[in-house]
Image (cartoon, rainbow, N blue to C red; front, top):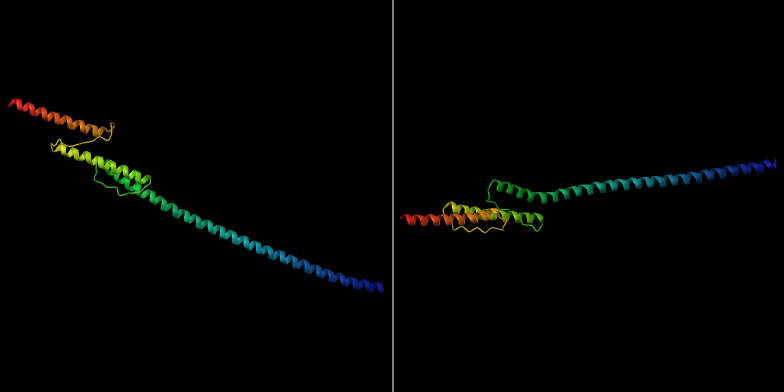
Length: 171
């Protein structure tokens, strides 16, 4: 009967140990589960924050791109409108674009073109009014229009002089 008593005590101790092990295991498992839940929450927060930052960056990028596109396209549109009018031989225009970039260079080139065409138009008006004192300076040897104007003025001047000489001889 003494052995049963010891065994009974051992069984009670064994059950107590098993209960403690179960409680310890449950505690470790709860800590592990709580830790995983925390990691999952942090991961979800990080993903949400990353998506939010990406969306904000895309919106800022789109706004900046739109702004830059407008900065580039507005002056070019103005120059295109003026060039369309020049193509219709309407040369009374002013290009009000003054920047230091390529668009500014394009605007400067168009201003020089308009000035030159206005000079030629002024010379043509003088010639049409029988005033052959118009001075046309060709921009280069390749300036067909300027060289033609210069030749035309010289030829007309010579023709008028010749007609005057002939008229004097007839009288």
